[in-house]
Image (cartoon, rainbow, N blue to C red; front, side, top):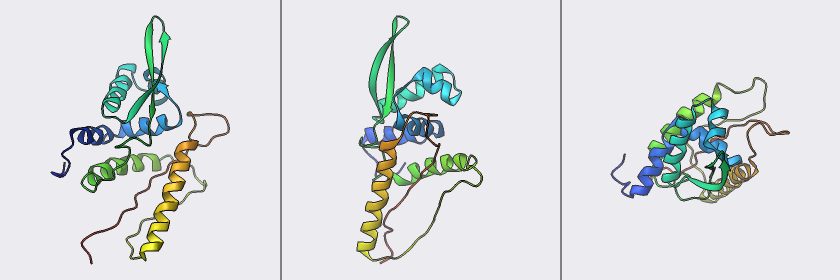
Length: 176
């Protein structure tokens, strides 16, 4: 971890996200609130394992308890990923390497599930562009990503398709 990351809450959020299983959970919990039992069933985990990871992410501020319900005499929490929460993305350059390393592993896993013949796009580039072109591109991509997050629905809902989106746009430094 970079010496620039000194906020204990920020470090906890990064550690919580730097686990491939937790990244899958965060993605799934964007579309709906789910209990540990529901997450366990969807991801083929034990209830204890799902519950542990959900608590870690909640404690790091990445999840909110969306609701509680009575289940067989106990209380079941249903968690949701708050895409607007501080720490939901790696905005601090000191945080970026750990965040992108975790995301890269998850992207490799997802790519093995790319449906043959399905429409998609990917790009990788290191470019020099005018500042106004850059600002417009960042705004448009951020708007598209935000729209997809807000449109996310529960896993396997009728009339939905399972998709993957990964974005990383940032200004490079030290080259001027």
